[in-house]
Length: 86
Image (cartoon, rainbow, N blue to C red):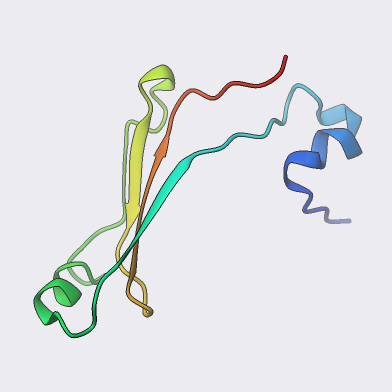
């Protein structure tokens, strides 16, 4: 059986409570215009790598990103300390 329940998983499978928790992060998408060939090429997967810096640094947090996709969207995100209701 496969369950894709996101943040509800520990509620549906009590054995995972305390092992699985919901987190959130900040994500920005930048649309690279196709008519700006310099930017289109600069942020394409051939020249702009996927990256992750400091993701596992706990309170400090870190950033990650991906090159633009075929629709022209470049994704950059932040992951850091999260708070829950416990």
